[in-house]
Length: 170
Figure 1 (cartoon, helix red, strand yellow):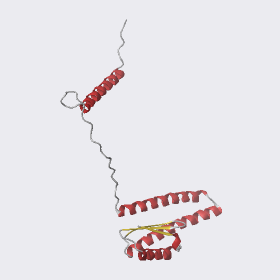
Figure 2 (cartoon, helix red, strand yellow):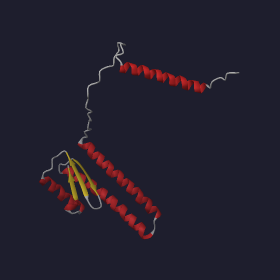
Figure 3 (cartoon, rainbow, N blue to C red):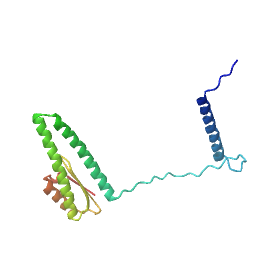
Figure 4 (cartoon, helix red, strand yellow):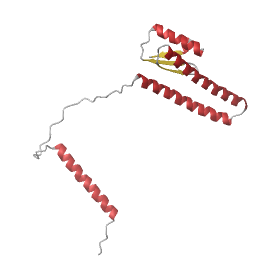
């Protein structure tokens, strides 16, 4: 009876598995038993409480994130509308075109309001104009009722939205 030569790939797999088993046993024995070799189990570690670190974002980082999300959503909507503009005809095309113009107008109003708020001393701000509401975020200053009224009046004057449609946040 003739012995077959073992497959070299299988041989290497068996050698690798054996190596990792030996490595694991050695690692476990060093952790589970003390270094003196007496075979005594190590005492249980003291109880510890998991501490979760909450990431603190700077005011400017929050505003940048807000603007980035706002611009990303607007870009997606703009791409969709532009694609619809290429594929539609007649009245539907005019409606899509009007919607694109409205989107650009909202963007212009947002930049205008951000610049006006900065000129009034609210340097850290972000504005988003939606179809039914306007969101204004002001960071770096505590807003009192007079400041809120001033910001609200400015936003209503520039956008034409009613006071009830404006959300001012710190």
